[in-house]
Image (cartoon, rainbow, N blue to C red; front, side):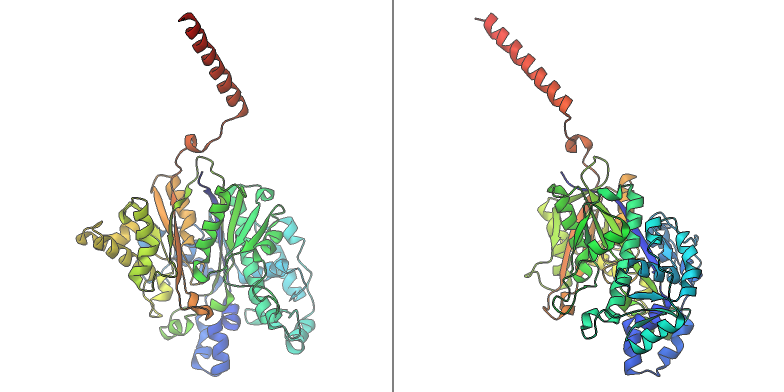
Length: 514
């Protein structure tokens, strides 16, 4: 029996000060060219929290708009008002930076995050008012320390500063004097990632209606990796986030694969559930501080706002087949193997055409494809083009080459089988998975019958190989309760009794026939 998708959570956290102080484009510029015009102009291009609520792709990410509704608006979107400007959506929320700092402190169990006491007193009531934040989480909030203590740790102890509205309000302390893996810089990245995962987990549990104690396994698939000098990436974000989210019955592991990791993790979760190893598995990930403002130079040059000011996060619940929810069909898996090659055609063939052909399907038999769902508002000004559209053109061209699509139909393929990109450029965050929440709803409503989720990764970034990576899977309408439901004990007894009666009648007939 295939496993099913029972729910999902999607969250964003506004992080304008983190753009300035933690995004690698900016921190590198401060080292290489500290007096650059870019650094001078950058603060003028940061968005307010209210402006992020008024941005359509953000509202799509948390479920207040659909990708189809977004596609009805001409690009660019950053200079248009959103029809809905809400903090909360059906999938999650857009959390303001100050509350996210408090959530980072809540997620810290080694007293590494220190926040100034007046800041805590100001923000704590607002975080407590968030309907997803539990009493147990609020119980973890510390009162805070003096401004002088924060300054001491930053100036004398190598702590990484935290700013809000360009004011120092806290810091992340280092956990070791010489281990760079436990430096304040790395721990800030890790704790921000963990906090985002915690928030996404909370929404996934709420949206799916599952009892938190029934979650047995959590798989984290972010792009951070925690550890120390003896095992740099050996840690476990999954179990660490599950602890804060109150998933007391869960253990877990981390799956890493750059941008392809979420799809690897979803296949792993579906396999574990289908095998009966676990009944309920959540795949989760927080965001990446390093990628904040990644394309900021191009945005400032074009007099745009800094759109990469959001920390992303998501969580998806994979459970035993209930005869209702959409299934993950593990018979249709695409794989970019060692021998696939790196040409665009080879990549798309291995991830899309080959698995479909093995199962007697054509490219046009899949209703929707979800590859790299980057927001084109961000990527086009930076010279990367419309990434989702480029993927759809390649998939459509391959369908034409295979004789599955008329050449005259190629222009309509992206609109019919594709989606307009809306996800923040946080590496793993846009890689296929942003559509899972919508796909589940679209399949349950009968709008579509299936969708393919495609994750692609750049393994060469780790300097271990020149290979690319990628995997894909298909979500489909449930094949029916009659094919997936068990038989009760009473039904078994009734079937046995009927069989015995029929057998007895047969014997009687044979006796009478003698």
